[in-house]
Length: 499
Image 1: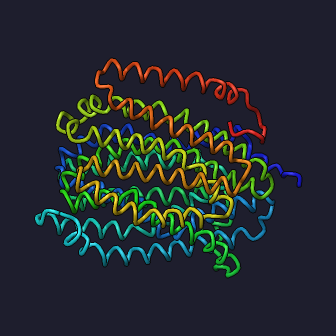
Image 2: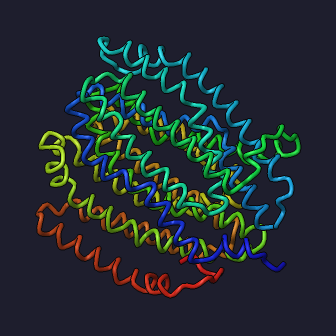
């Protein structure tokens, strides 16, 4: 079937590359503000309150699961219809998703309002002096849930149309305000209620802006319509399994801080989460690429399915070249970096945490592509079932490792799960698309080599030796990456290329 001009535009190599850059900018730029703001927040709020603030940050992202995966489902269904040129009933699809998402967000508000007090008083090891303050902060977070989930629908629409520059224009100031808002409130009070209120204000402003941007792309947003039964089924069929993933996967990502907070202390949470917030931000690189690749793969499935194999191979290559240098630098210079940034106490307590997390984030990059392939191909159930299988073993491992080795054990347990997640998802992708088997075998070999080199690097104690190893890693990435850069610079509006 001959592709229409819109499909060509949405799948063009230049547009995908440009979208990935904008998406990464929107996700990663707040990191610079965070590096400056987090030490100031710790000083202004104290380690106890800052540990709780990190959980509130987590809640802002995690509670978006109350959209039941409908935001992502909206991206897929809109992208598929654009690929097929079927846009006549787009308004019904969009408004059905929006109304369902807002309703689910209101349900989430009720759940969090009811659960805030038991969580603070009986689960987390929170100082009794600030328990009431923390409960109020969590309730403010609950009130903002409909706004948080509403933004997933607007972002879903913009992603389906590859409008990542527009998304970045909102994400950059929002990400900055995530740190700057609480930092501003600490100038007159360390109270968590004010810090959470600042976060909610930023979210409301972002949601309004995203609505106007999405309405400029899909005029149907300006004309509210009643929900349509015929699209509720497809939305929930895809979104339901995504919801399982959205519940289980973040739970396994963030469960460690709850375990640390209950088994150790909120101060230990601060020693764990502060470097985690920085290391995990490097994941914005694969997240940015996958946000772009998801609608491209969904569009390819509708009309250009043969592109999947090419997209898969190229994305794996590029992710490795992009992720290896920063993660190698973090792994090899963790001790010196922490001492320079947060002082000797953090360096002594968190160096092993940073090294384990850096390794886990790098290995997790190899899981992102098969996950996106499975979801964009209409099989989110495979991803969800994989995460369900992982949940209990990971919980047991996390409890054991934390009880035996403290926060370093928590980080090690998280990284071990990343390894098994990558192995399983790549195996399922290989079965679904047999043409990928050789590429996935190569991925397994690459992962084994990275684990071996990381083990050797752990025993290099001199700064000079680690510096030489880092220089070699950077040189390797530059040599391997230069042909891809040349190809990117030479690209025109060709549809057969990712970069």
